[in-house]
Image (cartoon, rainbow, N blue to C red; front, side):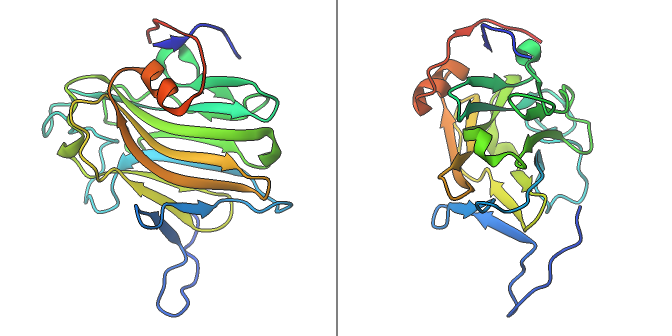
Length: 224
């Protein structure tokens, strides 16, 4: 479904005490980390969905979700956003709602990998040089076409801030027959932006995701 209105590798950080500072993995026991601090100089945040770092050969996020070499799944990256001024919307390939980094909503999706063969997966950029613009952003993935089979691969989303460590969220929970996974929630708590692991699988379409998180958008059927 599409919303029914029109809108327009850094080097690794040094380790201390044997602990790597180049990556933070969010887990059930440690689900939240700060992305920005109030007043800190920030830049664009890149959100990438792809194979986990343990895969010897990447072929795009969930390229083998329906079986090795079949390319039978079209999996999309997207987000719901709410700005500080109350504006709400969705960024996704469906309905060609790719967003903009040159104005509101200050979020942009690079494109749509429909075959799972793009080495870099799908990428979304969020302008955290303007953290006060945002209230909350819910990053999600949706199986647009093909049989839902989240357990078939070791999926991962990685957030690349302009400064500080990468933030990794592994999709390590069974998804059943759900087509949508709420992956991570970014929120402005007044002291900066934080990110919290969700990994919640939602039965239904984007409107079901909306209801689960209380976004309150109006939805209509859409296509690519």
